[in-house]
Length: 75
Image (cartoon, rainbow, N blue to C red):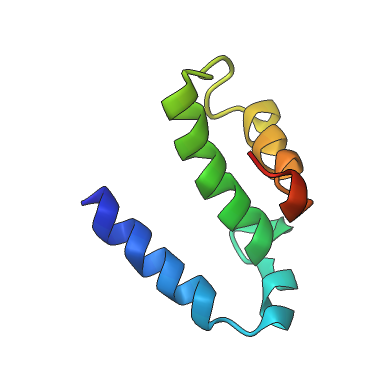
């Protein structure tokens, strides 16, 4: 199920015009589409790396987004 969801998200992001990456997300208006994608990637990376301290807190999710702000520095 995860693989299928991941493929659908990748297709959606690949087809999205670059300017739409900066659109706000209605459920999380302080986040953009890019921030949401960073969070989704961050959750997976954190689970695989065993970084679960503070799971689902604002601090945990904010770190995921911050770590992926600069694509050249993403983990």
